[in-house]
Length: 340
Image 1: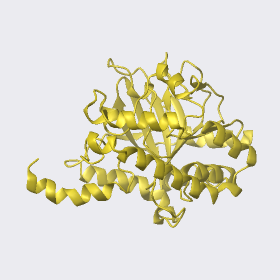
Image 2: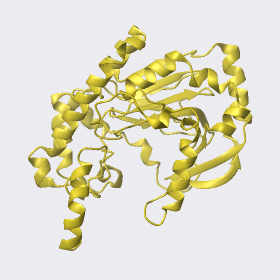
Image 3: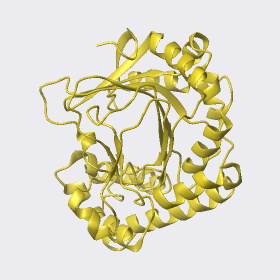
């Protein structure tokens, strides 16, 4: 890149330091070994976590005390039998029978399919409102995300062992980004060990001195590393490294249907290897915002009428900009969650 272009982009790169931008290769300031040796990445991590603690303090009163304590200790909360059995069976039947516009991405040998929980799905599966509006879910999701904002909701299927290809990169333990963020899984079927359950390193969401030192060390080489996903800001870690950070071995969540798991994905997590090609089907939720934003709420994307349309808008915008940005989610027509 020549000097005039660098000069034009420098203010943009500098402004990104105060956002959730995480790629060590797309931003030469974020990826600068010299600046990170001086503490740039570590400072962004520290400030982002301090802001999350401040925002969570204002949301804590709405969360059940035992769930708040579990999250603070582990970084992940598991709730079995989340909905009453009859209500869950009705919701499950509606969602598994729904056919709608689907998107898929392929990572290694695994296909991930997502169907937006949008206006069409909500009209066809009205029982979804009992989950989406459940006060226990809303309080916990917002507390873990540290923002009083509506998460994105999808009907998601994980279809493992579908390609003759290298292993799914999501099998590697990783942190999604450098700051707290929320993902959740509400399982519509039993998830056995053979189906590649979610796995999480309990306590790895905490910013300990060991974790901060690891973050700083990785920031010095992430830009030039062999792992593409680490270089884009989702740092990978080997299981044998966990003990050096005073962390336990991962917990594998092989759970029955009607189980809700909510996790801070700054904590190390992965999919477990699957020995079957049977799909894992779930409601999947995601909430990640600018970690340096001091306000917990005031999000236009949470306004009814907008919230349930955001996913479709995001997909269409990404399609329109596909020549400029990578669009990994390709439209695959109308499908059910369990279709081959």
